[in-house]
Image: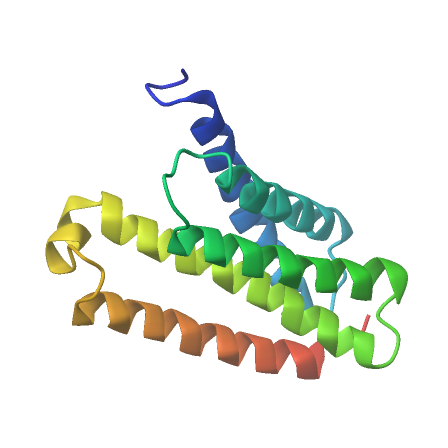
Length: 158
């Protein structure tokens, strides 16, 4: 146990934070049309590892977090294919951008859900995550990422 939590949870948390931070740098690169190779590689790897380790966390049934993890792994597979197999040629450039931005969005979606589950002030606003404050927060995040994705598709020309 590390810091009072099981090792797998600690590893999952570290990978998640690394994926979020590297993802922000990688997506910033898309917005300014600058290749962020190291951050991009770390983002894709850490985000895939976060999704994979999520399945090792204790659960007695299929949870929404598992569904998000499955979707994230599929989206990441498309991003990796577009980047490393098709080298962002022709349509693969915008496919990569959409996949990368979607993968980061899914990380942020989970971050917001975890914030509402774990932070007392947010939890009080939406204890079941079915209340309007949770939906509004997730809606705002979605709109922001749709805008980021649209701008990145137009601007990213590696």
